[in-house]
Length: 95
Image (cartoon, rainbow, N blue to C red; front, side, top):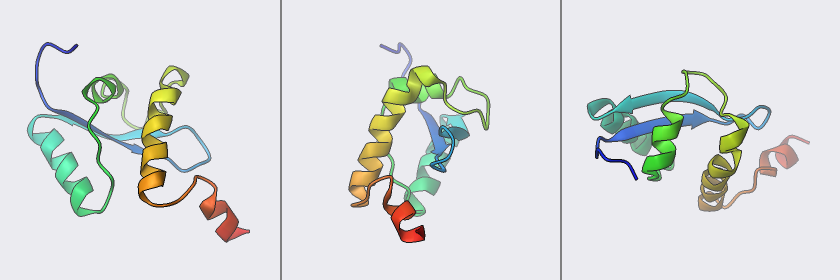
């Protein structure tokens, strides 16, 4: 468990072609801004302090490592369920 309760936030971009990549990260006030912008933009936000802390150690625009695929896949599956979609819905629309 993390000792400090410092707020940390990350944002990922998933284009369905490559692994998701880190596109924003921050702590405290910057973390709050990331969450506020995402919420106002209709981007689903979830809280997982340990995953956010781990992802925040990546370099900006770095694809997530294979060791984090399962954890990030769980979050992506939740996002798709919220939207009533599957990862393949857009592919069907474009066919």
